[in-house]
Image 1 (cartoon, rainbow, N blue to C red):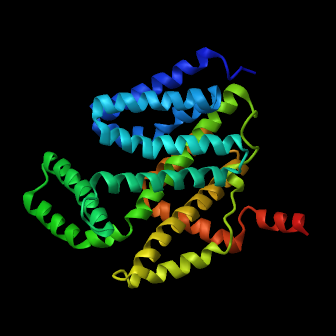
Image 2: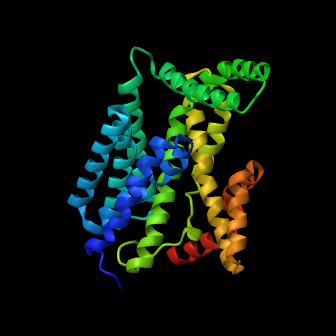
Image 3: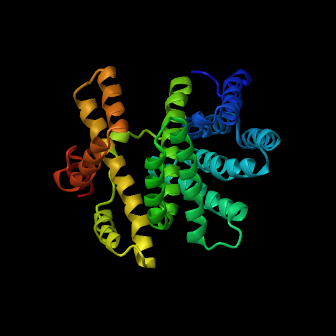
Length: 316
């Protein structure tokens, strides 16, 4: 088994971090993809070399970003990725379950990212107005991209009018969008770092858990039902809270549906090509995403993996 403390093992993560920084700066279209994977090298070095070298490396990346992209981008990087990487690494070292590692790191990133955005760009606007401004900025970037692709001006104006009317509704759910993005990023990085770590060092740090055995507490189905009712009262504060809860619970059941899907693929000894095809289709097809969410919800009653029955027998 390899030694995690070997100095040579740190070179590749450092190169990956620098490559990610330069890709975001000089190739903005790659920003979303690179952004999702950016915390992984930070987490890996933190686990491999320890707390002090990990924090020093994060500080160096922060300084490089501040020099190349300016203080606002560096502060957002620290709020989103440094917090996520630190919390995820510490929870892994504490031997917490994968659900707690992912949730706590995503929550920390979401809270600090929201506060940083509000401090940097909030001004005198209310929280909803601030979120609405952020949504409109993203929409304007999308409009510029469509315009460069030759979209008709009349169609663009129609899209802009419709989006401006719906922007306040989206703004009320903006915290959930940030949390959803943080959860997805934390989950991707957790499983990526765990995969690489086990390949290099074996089962020395991560708990022996299988994603295919993920079970969401049954009571969350009531949160799903009650929050879905709030979609009819979007203009109220209660409606805004319900929309945010609904988006988060749907993502949670999507994860459970993915766990069921992985269990089926594992039980059938599916070839790697089948795995890749299934996940590729899930990513690009909204219908299949909905189907996976449905699997996650109905697993409460159907128990596709028979895990609840086994857990009940063990507890008895």
